[in-house]
Amino acid sequence: MPTRTAAQRRAQERARYDAYVAECPARQLLERIGDKWVSLVLNALAGGPLRYSEVSRTVAGVSQKMLTQTLRALERDGLVTRTVTPAVPVRVDYALTGLGRSLLPVVAAVKDWAEAHIEEVHAARRAYDG
Image 1 (cartoon, rainbow, N blue to C red):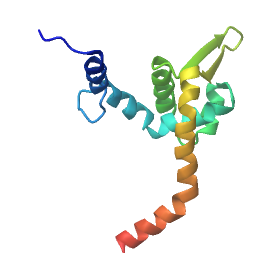
Image 2: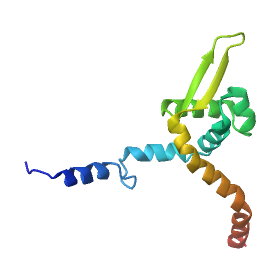
Image 3: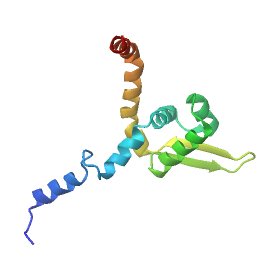
Image 4: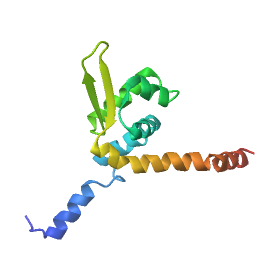
């Protein structure tokens, strides 16, 4: 077996996480953060912890099933924490983790860009369709 230099080992490690390669695990993460509900939920939690019902009201149009699936997936990926406070009724709060906060500037920028440029996109669509 040939000996590899440290630089060659580092290059091989980087190549393992090339999202252009179909088997790359980073693709799964790109799929997750590319989901519209994920982006909106992360942005909703930017101001601090929210209860499920508050997230639901903030992210208009999301079904209960999709919101539950999205929050569970974000919790599984370490982007959101779920805190249960024993009370009557039980209180459940969702908050961004450090990892989730590190992603927030990216998804917030995409949301802001979409809000700022939607009219241009509508105009382009009309021109294309016409």
